[in-house]
Image (tube, rainbow, N blue to C red; front, side):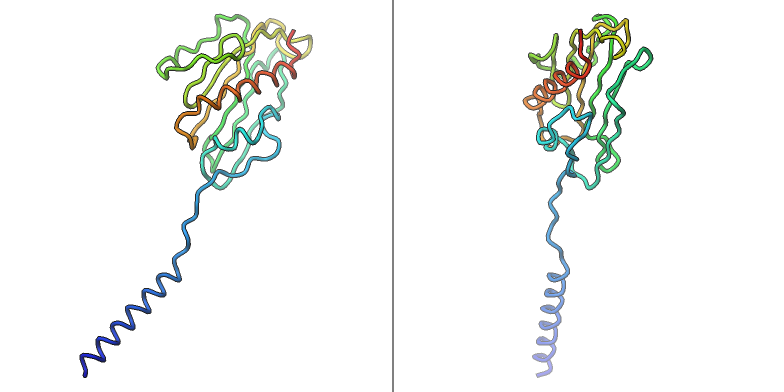
Length: 183
């Protein structure tokens, strides 16, 4: 009889502990990227196209100044940080000569040629191009002849964004040419 009581007590305790453990466990949270603001990175990109490329996290912050250039300011960037780490970057740089644009450091990534700008390329985590762009008076360096545009990703959820990045590069190029009124 004593054994039956002990067995029942052990069984009851086990079931109680199991029920408590099950009640305390929370459903697994699915990780997602934080929602992009409606306007970001000079409003050069479509939010729906960039959102899937961001790494998972909770908080997003943007670092970008105005998309304005001068004799002294030849470079602009926009960075989206997810939980303090960069997730997306866009760069625009005025160059005086076409030969100043050097992408040899990306050769090891096996970039694909893409039909954007004069020479567009894309690899798994980035894309770049350049266009002829002599800024009209007061919109950039007077000696500049070309605008180099680059996009970089970090922690993208996809394994190969080579299909998505050319479209973003095309958006960025159209935006820059319109904003800068390239002559």
